[in-house]
Structure formats: C-alpha cells, structure tokens
Image (cartoon, rainbow, N blue to C red):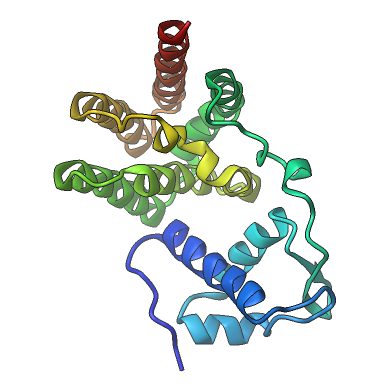
Length: 236
C-alpha cells in the first residue's frame, strides 16, 4: 500500500522519503547488515520516482546510516559518531561556526547559480519558481520559511545538471538555513529582505543571465554573513 507523500518539489519528496526510511531503521530496530527493501519497492510504496529514492538513500548514506552495495542492495551499517560526520559539527550557538559554513556555501553556490542560469531546463525553472513562491507563502502565513528556503537552494543546485551540487546541498542539510536556531525568530522585515535577494537570483536564472545569477547569489550569501557578523558584534 502506498504511503502518503507531501506535495512539493523533489527536494521535499527526498526529505520525506529519507525521514521515513530513517524512522524505519530506528523503529524496527534494524541492525548492521540488515537489508532495506529494493529501490523499486520503496518507490512503489511511496509513490515516487526511483531518482527520489536514490537521493533519499544518498542522504542516509551521508548520515552514516546505510551503505549501498552494487548489485546487492542497500544495507544498514554501524552508526558513525555524529561528531565525525561532515557538517554535523556545526554549532549554531556559535555565530563563528555559522559564518564558516556561509563562506563555504558562497564558494559553491555562486557557481551553482551561474551554471543553473545556462543549463536549467524549463521544468527546472518551473521548480525554482515554485519553491520561490512557497517561501513567500510561508512569510505571509507567518510560519517557518526554513524548509521552503532550503528547497529553493536545492532546486537551484539541481538545475546545474551536475549531480554533485545537489549532493553537496543535501549533505549540509538543515545546517544550510541556520536562522531556525536563532534565539529569536527572524522578523518580517528580515524575511522580506531575504525574499528580495532570492527574487534577484531567481530572475537571473530565469533570464539565463549567468553573471547576474552569480552576483545575486554572492550578494545573498555575503549579506547573510554580514547579518550574522552583526549579531556576533552585538553579543560582544
């Protein structure tokens, strides 16, 4: 029987399937060496494409929970201590740790935006626009924009048509949107500024202007870095 899946883009579906598989491993007490259902079976159970399943499994692999073995399937592995997993040591209580991650994201995502502008398909452009609109819906509904924001950045990475960019974003995961961990939720003016910055990026990608896309993404992430540095100074 198919399980209910949320509406939304591939980033949302991947997050849903990977979360459900993670819960399956924990709830059923699967041990190292136990095998997950086949890719085809998982796709059928969740009513998603096999591409979504592969990306969900890649997210679990990045978390050190499973290991795909060519020709044999996907197996549960001995958990790796969170402290040694990449990007799991980001300390949101330390602004300097957030700034470190933003510097890395700037180096990767500015190029991703530029590539997306020249490589994106019409379907990928539509996905980016949909994710952008979802951020605005969240702002208007006064609910957290973190998931929608992350989905937008993943959609841009996927539009490079280089799978490594998408893998990088999913490897970072929720750490990519650190404002969810601030002591006080961001205000409406702050979110409106973020939306305008996103709007500039999306417009450049839609218009196939790679230099404008690169510049807009750099300004967005550097702007975030400046805002967090301001918080650091204010705390001093």
